[in-house]
Image 1 (tube, rainbow, N blue to C red):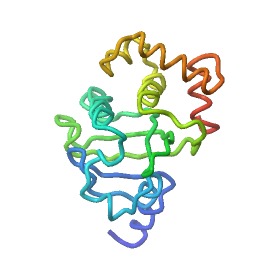
Image 2: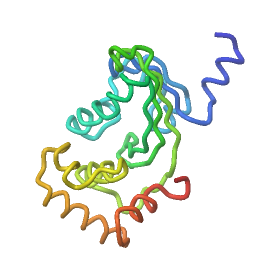
Image 3: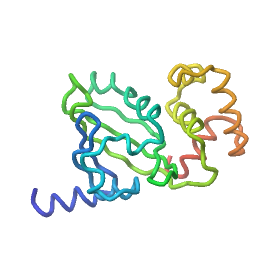
Length: 180
């Protein structure tokens, strides 16, 4: 890679990652800063280091797999967690280089939407907010998380009160900040 190509990669305005089977093979400085790690710490690591729990890591794996198989692309907005635990929102985009096995070789970008850290959320609240951000109903979120729909409704109601909003759309807008 020549110097100008390296500079463009390393200083791109969004985080860039090449992963093979959910192992980080290359990442730029922007991505490392976004997640609060040194770039050399991330290379060779499982994406698991970026999630609060094994359940969250396992759940996120299957999101978008069918789109990656069918079209080679997937995009969403999701909440992630920095080293140390502070949550943040990103616009996530992925392109597989191997549609027959979408996670075998994947190029991803992570563009920050907000750096809001007020009103920290529990892992369960994060799970529910991520489902809401994907447009899922409470029943769909419950199925994905292996919970009862009533539990999801309770968490959703707690989130609305906690963030002083009237509905899920306002909640997502407030949590995503001005970038959404």
